[in-house]
Amino acid sequence: MDRGRLNMKKKFIIGALISLVFLYLAFRKVDYSELWDALKGANYWWIFPNIALVILSMWMRAYRWKFMVNPIKKVGMGSLFSSVMIGFMANNVLPARLGEFVRAYSLGTKEGISRSATFATIIIERIFDGFSLLLILWLSLLMYPKLPTWIRQASNLFLLINIVTLGLLVLIEVKREFALKLFKLIFRVLPTSLSSRAEEILEKFISGLKVFRNVPSLLWILAWSIFLWVMVGISNYFIFLAFDQQPAIFASFILLGVVSLAVMLPSSPGFVGTFHAACVASFLILNLNESVSRPFSIILHASQYIPVTLLGLYYLKKEHLSLKTIESDSMRKE
Image (cartoon, rainbow, N blue to C red; front, side, top):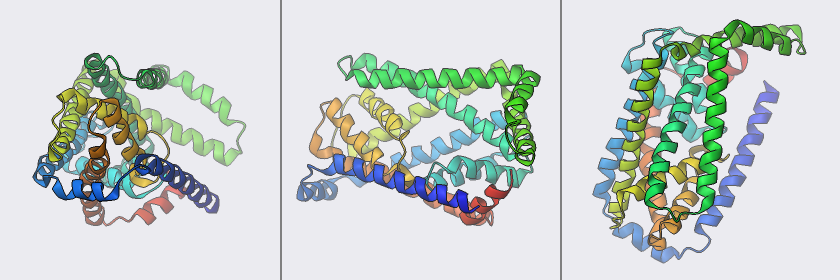
């Protein structure tokens, strides 16, 4: 447990340092009086439709997750939505993207299902998120053919990672017995107690891949994922309007793609720094008013961070859980 806490502390420090670097890059040339004037002059009524779509996208996530969890156990929307909010809140306040583990812990504890199997469905969800974002970004790039090549290169790398991960998961599910035998051979290098534990977790993890047996469900999940991310992209556009910016709607999806790529980097909880630098970079890429990019990044981040964190904390308290308890328990059990 002490070693786990030490590793967590190291990850937190590394993430904080990376966030500081990106914050410096984003705000090093800022005129703070101009920044304050822009914040004061913004039309904050536009934040409300943004927040509404952010919360709607979380409900859409829960509804999509239902189809991934159904092969394991039929779970109600209330339980799924609360776990989604708790997980995203945890990503905002805990280091090392622990929110995904917290979400699996929350649903597994409430519903009496394996946390490893639940975590497998979250990995599948992230793969579909990746494919959907890449499709939206690819279509947006057609509208902006002069964008930097690094965006296309990063998108291609992200696509390759998604394809390889998806292929491995499908192979593990289709060739379950072979995969188990192969991993058991690998686990033999571990001490007996760890090897047995690893095999147990692996078997439960594989049980969360049952959705791959249902092709119509997979196609529906992909379509729903694209719709979900279109809603997220549209939600960003309201913050453009808050600062009296009216670019083409595809600019909002370019912004979404660049920010999504940036927040994959290690950072402090809540993607502080990487998120803001990506917003500033997006304005430069799209030839938008650079002086608006910094206040824009602050308000867009806050409009997503604050409501998600508050709702997640509400559901955490409602379920009588604590992040400290979840972290400690996760170190001891599956």
